[in-house]
Structures are given as C-alpha cells and as structure tokens.
Length: 238
Image (cartoon, rainbow, N blue to C red):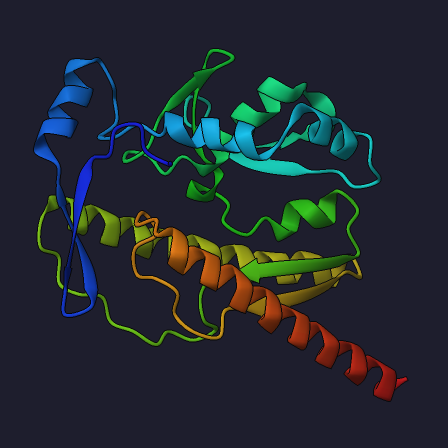
C-alpha cells in the first residue's frame, strides 16, 4: 500500500530483515524516466483514502494549525506547509511529499521545484513550532533515548545507502533537538520529549502492517503513562 514500484526485496535471516535490490523494478523505473529507484504513488492514494474531504474541512476550520515539513531541493531550503493555505488535493500531496524518503521513494515536482521528505533537513522541527508561538511542545522521537543496537554490516549498495541515510538523519535529528532546546529556553517554552521504550526498527523503509499497528498501540500507551507521570509530578511540585 506504500510503493507503486518497490525498489528492493526483503529477506529475513535469523530474525533480521535484510534488503536486496529488485533489479527489474529499478531498471523499469529508470526506463520510464524516473529519477528515483522506486515510486510511492500508492502512498498518496492511501492518504486520500484515510483523510476524506469532509474530515479535511473539519480539520482546516478547527482550532489547531496542522503543518507538514518538506525539503525544497531546488532552492536548498526547508518549507512548512499549513493546512490553512491549501485545498484538499494540494494538502494531501504535501503530506505525501513530506513522507517521500528519496531516492527510494518518489521525487515530486510541484510549483516548479523538486520536493522530498522534510526529514532530510528537519527531523524534529521544534524551532519552527516555537517560532509559530507554541509554548508547550510535545516532541515524539521514534527511537530510544540512548543507542541500544549496532547495525548489521552492509550487504549490498541499497543496504549501504539506507545505513548512510539513517546515520545522517540521526545526526540531523540530534542537532534539531539541541537547537530546539536552545530556542525553547530563550522563548519560555516547555518541551516534553517522548522516546520509544524499545528499538522499533533498524530500517524505516520496511513496512509491516502488523508490527506497525503494534508499535502504535504500545507507543500510545507508553506516552499516555509518561504524560500521566509528568502531570502527577507537576501537581506534587505545586
């Protein structure tokens, strides 16, 4: 439901998922003029099936501003797209673009520029949230607070690329958190960090519905319990 043309194969060995190159799919993608190894148009369909036009209008006219982060590769900058500035189809496309982990997923040309996942430049946009007036920021970090694993050795070009991207994105995320703490401190804002209690995955390009559903449930319960603990602590301090 994510890839319309999946660029890799997945093999499990000793309980670990290893990715290999789906040579035919990659060659077919390049033959069709694509600039990426795979395509993720199915994800756009999934987004539109999940968010209806009616729900979009309710969200748009609600009290909260919904913003997605995208990377403008043409202008070499991060951009933030608010639901208040777009209609249904356009905003669904921006949500889709914000999820496109290039070069494995679709590179989208929109408004004369090439766009990709906002995480390539801003994984945890705390700074932007504070700039927009937030005084309390709940930051959900999709890994444990300390590193608990060593990556498996790279087996092919794709696994090397994914390991390299994971390393770079981890560095970007840590930098975002440090900058966010500094900006929040200087603007009297509070940041609540929610890390995962366990390592979820070592490859964010492997989508397994059952596992992801379980992650969502356990993550929600963990965050709810932690939020309750923080509330109790605040009451005791008062």
